[in-house]
Amino acid sequence: MGLDVHSKHVLDVVSANVKKFRKVNDMSQLTLSLEIGFTNSSYVGKAERRTTNHHFNIVHLSKISKVLDVDICEFFKEDDIQITKINAN
Image (cartoon, rainbow, N blue to C red):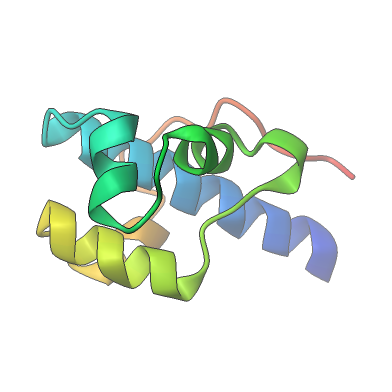
């Protein structure tokens, strides 16, 4: 697996896990967005769907882990998640 493909895969895993833990905590994209400092749900929605290569950065993940009370390491695990979009480019 090339470095670009690997990097995109990691971003897909992270996005899928953020979505999973957000739903486990019964939190909307808007609520999570507001909690981490955004004024609407657009960025979180795009990052969860990986629209136009949007993704969470380490600062976002740090804030999200605190808000959702999830160890930041959990976002990088591939266990029990289903990635609906894998970028092949």
